[in-house]
Length: 155
Image 1 (cartoon, rainbow, N blue to C red):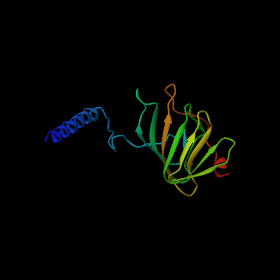
Image 2 (tube, one colour):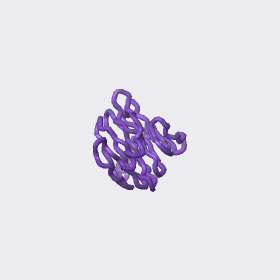
Image 3 (cartoon, rainbow, N blue to C red):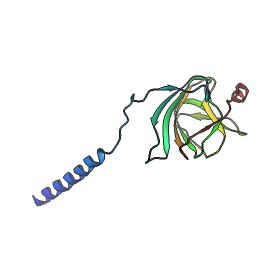
Image 4 (cartoon, rainbow, N blue to C red):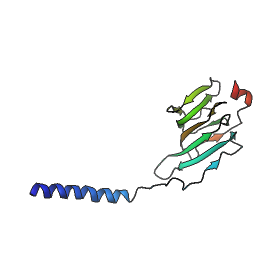
């Protein structure tokens, strides 16, 4: 009986601790943040962005789900602290300045180091979605540059 009481007390203590911790956990409900169209200055074609979370005093990155229709792509850009792309569906391309255009598929994870000029987006025939986790440095996650030309995109 004592063993049962001790186990119950331990479990209750764990439960009480978990409850206190859960109150400080934030939940950002699906649908609570509006979908935004990718700005024309930074994207070519139809691009939709669903911000998943923003950086705050406890995190040094932000994350968003970015969906590109076929032919859509980002402008050239860099990230001052790097970026991870987690491809969630479809088929896309990523290219570093001076490098080969490379295919990315659902399940692929792409790491772009700080300061590397690149673009990414859908292929010309298929759409692609990815979660972009952008590290933030000095309150900045991205430096946008010129648009990718049709010739660069299709080359």
